[in-house]
Image (cartoon, rainbow, N blue to C red; front, side, top):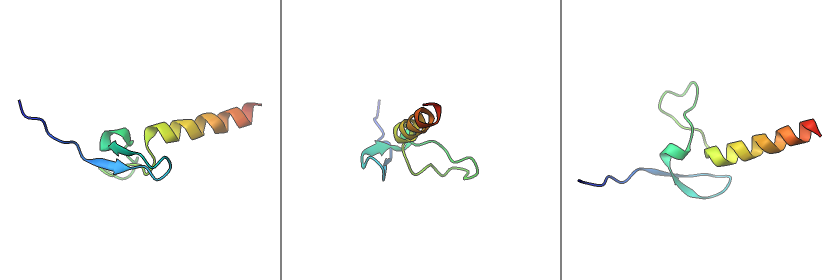
Length: 54
């Protein structure tokens, strides 16, 4: 069994080097990915929701 290295990308928000699968696909970008990782996007959305509901 051979191991293939997955490509990585750096999130400009948290500056972590993550596998490309940690970045969501763009809705209209075909195979292109979002700039921020899923964790950063979710965190900022939670913070925005908390500001709106308090």
